[in-house]
Length: 186
Image 1 (spheres, one colour):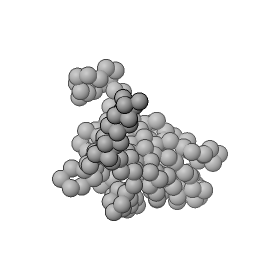
Image 2 (image 1 turned 60 degrees about the horizontal axis):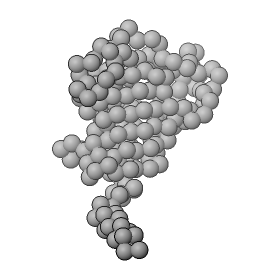
Image 3 (image 1 turned 180 degrees about the vertical axis):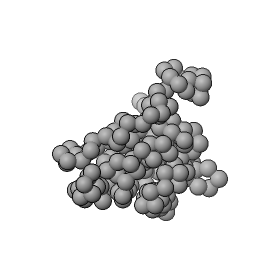
Image 4 (image 1 turned 45 degrees about the horizontal axis):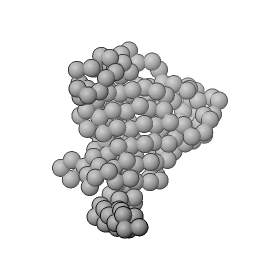
């Protein structure tokens, strides 16, 4: 009985010493993602990619993998030649999981609107889910990693993948083994 009481007390003490923050009390994370949405509306691939850390990455809804900021920029550049060329995005934070005071996982709903087909006709909005890993550097949030996927079926007429990219750098991790930490095997 004494051991159980001691274990329960220890667990209570540890949980009180390291509270897990699940919210975004100052709206800091949502404000950062709102800034990303504003950059998206400029259709400037370099500006959008500047929200990532230099060694950050992105896997977009279509499975394109951009490794480092240059790779992320190339994905956005390719999207600007597709149905997303005039699109807008609204990012709504659903949940924030604090890993440390400067690192969070964020679940969001991303609504893409103003998607144009090849004839220039506006298609219905699409809804995506995104898991972000953000890190605060020098007082500002940056994206470490983003994983996007569809939460509903895409409309039939939307081009389901952007035009293929010529640069194998974007989706072949074997080309970048030297940039991975030594404990990661691919």
